[in-house]
Length: 269
Image (cartoon, rainbow, N blue to C red; front, side, top):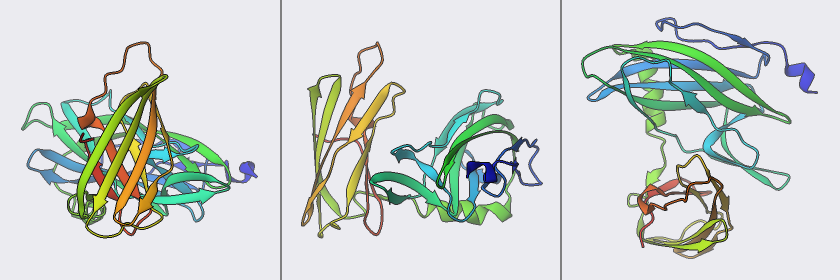
């Protein structure tokens, strides 16, 4: 029963971080820590770490059916110029015919922080929303603060390990050629792609296509693997009032289901 899980959920932040915590109604389900990280040539690398109780999972940026991906609101921050996320490769879950994509046990999500004015301190104040699921799914919302400074050796190893487990770039993974066709359909576009590898691709491989736009929904179609070739397609639907302009360079294709995830950025013609 869902009631057995709805007691208290504590957002815990590292002691070295200036932060405040709030309590939520999901005890023994998940814990969120903001890892203070380390300095980089362009700014700072921090991470959001979600630790999960046995049997529970959280979601990748493209979660599949019924998933809630982590999302961040940084509107209270000071001297924040840019933020970028470095997603570790996810796992694929199939349950009762529904495929979801995410993480069990733990997600460490590295986040690059670039200051608006170099050399001046960055103060983060934000809100994160994410979903956790077992037999039921629960949305979680939490606020955090963090003064970005220095290097925290205790969290550096966890962040770098997550960075080392990002999907392989297509070229490094042995994808020799990729072609992509975009055709208009009612309400949007159909994207069809063919990927060719140096070696045979796993039979269970499938591709997730993404296009970063707030008024776009992508319906992933089934893939076909034949030896070294993977053929895939997806329908992209635009539901906003403004006409959608398709920019091939902003399409991301991630091949999952094999021993390592493979990522291809851009949709070459």
